[in-house]
Image (cartoon, rainbow over all chains, first blue to last red; front, side, top):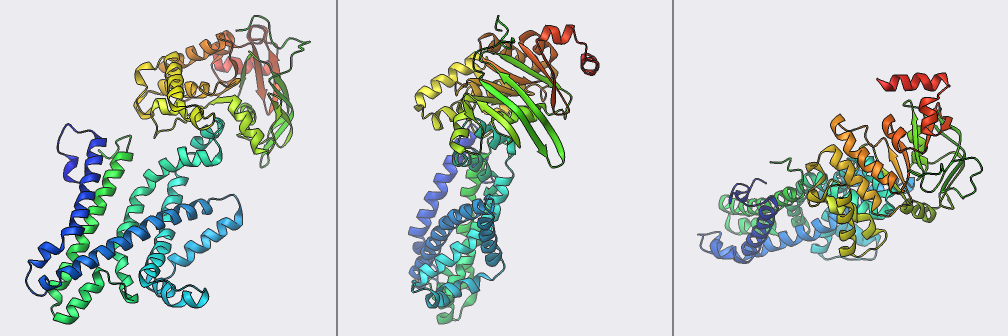
Length: 261
Length: 256
């Protein structure tokens, strides 16, 4: 853990530090989302008058990241398990998905879900939902590789011991393999989620009113790109920092052998 | 140790495990060749042989961690096949202790022991924990119950693994070279636990290089050579009246 709480207070245990960091970061995030308009509105032109828009855009960005991030982890786990399935066609399907998603630009995927998908299937999603779907499917493919690597890093003896005790294949995955794989997969997963938070700015092209979109609108109305984009970037920076603090705390909690100290 | 030798000719009880003409190949390597033997309730069978003789592979076929290619293996009345239900039923009754311990590193010592009873037997949490603590006391680890495996020595980890296997109340325990990964000074603490188990009447099949254990705790020695059982004999006869030159040579190498 790289946060302040990793060194102080000195007599706290690893778990206490972890819990405190997660709680504090969560509170910080909520306070930030609720209250960011206030300090922004105190700023001079062009930020002050647009404070509410910035705050609203920030909320949409966080919502998009949360929805796509959580779905993306579920998709990633599913695709990782499929990639390791004993039945070859399931492996091929998962491989095809990962290959196609990682080999095409996210921008094209966002546009595809919003503009092309309704022509293929009779389903018109809102701009927000389209962006969330595209982002979830995209980050899911990257998560799949991170999780697969984590699962494959678990020694075969773990599965053998679990199966020899009579646990079923599913129980072996849930209670023995996945918890250990998560620890290994966490750093790349966090990378993916941080990338997702930043990539959510691409939702702007299909009209989602998220943070980058607001920045661009305010800039277009005021012709003052420097303060506008410094503000926009600063908000992203706060969000990614909170995210890495939380993940660092989770990592510290899973680091039972305390290798990270 | 049983007083009556369980593998005397004319044995009329049904065997707990029966292997008949078991064959197994890894690619072109024919590692088990027509292996046939029976294991009885309460018996302590010790399997020895050079590395590569097929002894570990044979042990691992008994709970189907390795599939046999042909022949029959019947455990507690259930034949080992691809039938998953049967397999899970067999594995509940057959405990296994591994060379590399294979404890679950993310769980505490107590959780390692209580996991299978809770998830497989659906034993309530409090009861499975109580049983786990009892077993951990039995293997002398009552002071380490809340630690994680990495905080324990190799000998302590292997004793946890034994307690974990016992937690399912298995009818037979398989030991796959349980002391081979241990530092010399830790071997005895594990062997002592195994001897205690043998004395308590536990059915055990152990692959090991510990000849003293084989002699003191074993009821029967099985000597594997090139995928076959070259000889089965009671320990006294096996060690003291050995006539087979190949086995004599093996014992000579092990002795120093």
